[in-house]
Length: 464
Image (cartoon, rainbow, N blue to C red; front, side, top):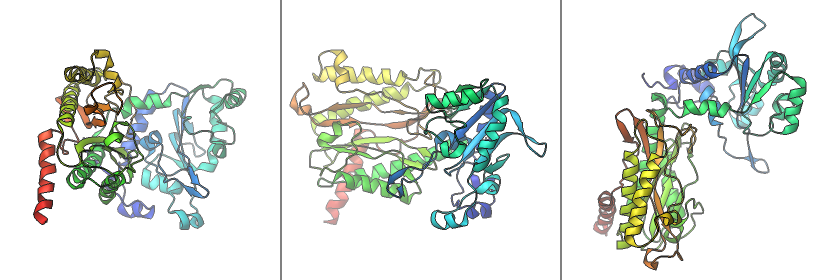
């Protein structure tokens, strides 16, 4: 199947009319196909209701930059808050005699509000830009639910974002016990299932060509950022300067967000798994562990590289790095069709345990957990920790392989190992022919790292 984009299905003028300037987004046919898959998996006499993420206040009248609920975006392509999707297995009869299985509800156009905050789709825009079967004002959602729920036996619902009181006037306040009682009293034959996310996880775990196109873009941008930092960073840089260079490259290449807060740990901070403060000034001899990924059109990258900021591995840093790299190599090789999801983890654990024993950092194999305390893999996609069933691997799965060793000061081992934190993380596509490392354009081996480190420092010396 050819990986299409939005511009191939929606006229350019239509996209611009609604403030859409990126023609390489997922096409309406992708989202329509996802809705069809979900409808096929729903039970008879069932309805699914999904809500967009509400806007969130950061402080006073300032909101956080908006990010759509991944499940909602996956099914609709709609990027606006104040929206909802209703899917009916058996169909909903409209006043004109037509029967539809999908109805998208969005905010009405509001020229005064749009002057301040930008274009809205409105129902007509949803039809034109998103190609949904039917679209209506969000204000009409309560009446629709009141009409169709008495004849519905099963309701699938996504309760992740609290109480949508302002949308449906207590009709579907399903996020607490009282709400369920209200629904039960009004619709005694209705069974409420909050398993919608699990249904979608089966589909979201297997990436389509359209999705992989966006993931490759996000990962390529992230590789470029990592390479620039390895080339440019010097002792005396603050951790936030490393973060700033990476995020500058993300933005210049069209990424809308970071996939997660950038982790830049130097020296002692490299041993903190999710260190996000990024305020320390680096020193010569520091080992840097940087975990940074771009998000492009909703799809995340997740890449970690570790390196000595002065360009030279100490003997201890080199030995730890070699163990982590061997563990990652072993984990990547385990990412084959049919293997258990945790096969990469078990492979990495064995290498790390043997390596720590050999170096005398541990004396009991069970103690590896002191220095490698996290899992090796998670799914990657619309979320950095993406939806999936964690069953046997199948073609189209994208997962991380990210073993690490973290030895903070005061650990029960020779102090020469203290303050070395090393993680190497890549994004792996499972195929019928074996694993593909999507993030291989950033150096992983010591030889490749040293080439990049030495070349940049040679250029700096030549300029002087």
